[in-house]
Image 1: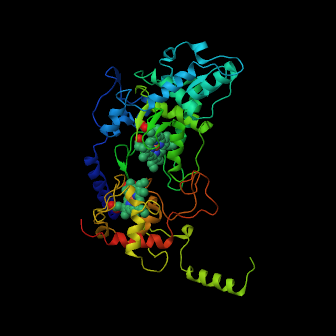
Image 2 (image 1 turned 180 degrees about the horizontal axis):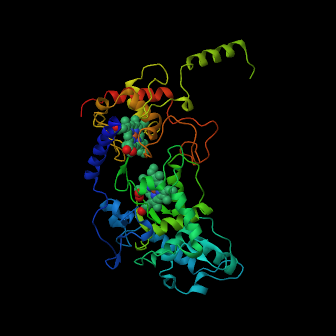
Image 3 (image 1 turned 60 degrees about the horizontal axis):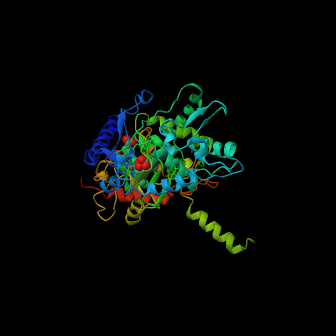
Amino acid sequence: MIFKTLTAAAAMLALTAPVLVAGGADDDTLVINGDIEITTKAAAAPHLDGHLDEVMSGWHFRDDDTQAMEMDDFDNPGMIFVDVATDTWNTAEGSEGKSCADCHNEPESMAGVRAVYPRWNEEAGEVRTLQMQMNACRTERMGAEAWKYDSGDAINMEALLASVSRGTPVNVAIDGPAAETWEKGKEIYYTRYGLLELSCANCHEQNYGNYIRADHLSQGQINAFPTYRLKNAKLNGMHSRFKGCIRDTRAETFNPGSPEFVALELYVASRGNGLDVEGPSVRN
Amino acid sequence: MRLTGLTVAAVLVASAAFANVVAPDDVAFGEYGEVEASLTGSAGDVDKGRQIFSEKSMGNCVSCHAVAALPDVPFQGEVGPVLDGIGEYRTPEELRGILVNAKKTFDGTVMPAFYKTSGFIRPGDDYTGKAAPDPIQPILSAQDVEDVVAFLMTLKDN
């Protein structure tokens, strides 16, 4: 017994050493275009009691150059795709000859919407992500084809809708009819998948602030999606990010748009309740 | 393929060479998670162990652990403890146990089990995101584990 306690103590000592050096999240402030103040740190929602005290945007874990790109729309490559989506917004498509603008006017009419998705849709009797809702409009109201989940068209539109909600705190509902989906998402978050047997929580709750090889682990928040990644020079959807993270545990992944990822999106979004919508963001 | 006398002989030789290898499911752990007996009966190769420890496609231990004795390996991680001097305060038996399945030594640890082939949830085929083919291969072979143990035992000074 003594043996085990002693060595565990040695391991603990070694464990705390690099953490002091790493410093975790920085203390910078995010203001976009000198105008939109973004809340990037907030007290954790009550449902995170015992797990996290404070929630933080992934922005705090990036280096200064990457951070700066997000502080001005002219420097943020993600905004190019917002422009593309603005054209799509105004373009009639499908058998009904309607565009998004025909029903919703300006994209600014969507301010605040990103912040409350995924959300329960009473008529459909399901939790819908923003992409699912966009596709419902396309198929049911426009007579157009659904966009493939996380495809360029869908992500660009999601970026447009995020951009007009920047500065609004994420506030997804987890109770009532959404509760069942939320519980399912929570279970997935804490499941240790793959040959490496790692859960989302192992990396993003237990080890945020630490380096895992060249990557500085963040809390894996999704308030800033879609993210323009310097690594692949395009906008990335959250389900694609989930897929990449699960793949990296040497697991069989789920697919973008799957019920598992819809549930996980709701749960992860709720972990960011209180952080402002920040997308499209810039990450490495 | 037709089994000729030659291939039968080759197969026999091959299985004789592996006769001493302990299969992942047969590894016996001590009270504190240590594994007494060598998995192969052959001594570990320090240089190979260093390589397995460092390379992403192999053990990729450096993604979580830093080791000062490897100044040329970039981006050493901080998820696990620094392993400088580990050969001083751990025995080969303990290290073998930690490598085979660290959860037997550290309950619930994030450190993966490197010589294990069952009990996974949605095991995948390497980093493809696809399902693992049957039977599942351990991340490291028995001899890989012995090689890494040999390398760790050289990390003496703190």
